[in-house]
Image 1 (cartoon, protein in one colour):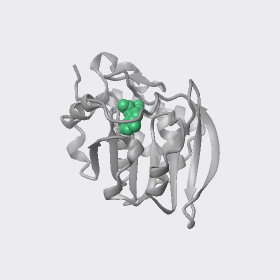
Image 2: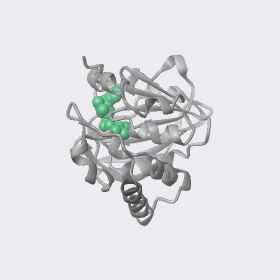
Image 3: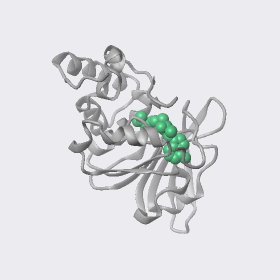
Image 4: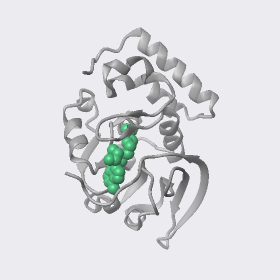
Length: 218
Ligand code: SAH
């Protein structure tokens, strides 16, 4: 069961979480402000209300996870999102990362490959607050050619390699933040698309994500 009440206690816990993220090196005020505003406990069963604001990942349905707040903040900061930019997210999951981007006034397109998670999210209470987020059921390796090109792409599952179609769907000068690697640990990469269609690469910290899998799942 979930409860949708955002009390002063929850707001206080979020303030503490924001402080933890600052201490860990997150400096982008727009990212911190989005996290301060979004009730993360709405994304979890009410039994876990208290730990919703600890800095850790948490299981949701279908063996998937809501990413750790630090990971969400870190990826979002690397993405350098500006208002009205078109952002493609791979791996909707709980929808938390998408809503962080939506709160930052991006035009968000998010894809989930698991039908159950996709369907469950349809009834999510915060959804109507963010008409700037569009949800798709599909395979993230394919991206969304109909809506390309994108200013930014964010992948929130462990990619075994850089999906070429996602690079194609970036604008020149556009950026993609993607954890790459098989096994338990992935390297966070930031790619910047060049005019000749190639992409330059910057390498950041190690993280641990659930795998990015090929194809859709019913
Ligand atoms: N952004 C999410 C993190 C979810 S975990 C959040 O904020 O909660 C990663 C998600 O990626 C899972 O839901 C998983 O089903 C999904 N996923 C894995 N491979 C995918 C693919 N090829 N296309 C779309 N989604 C994928």
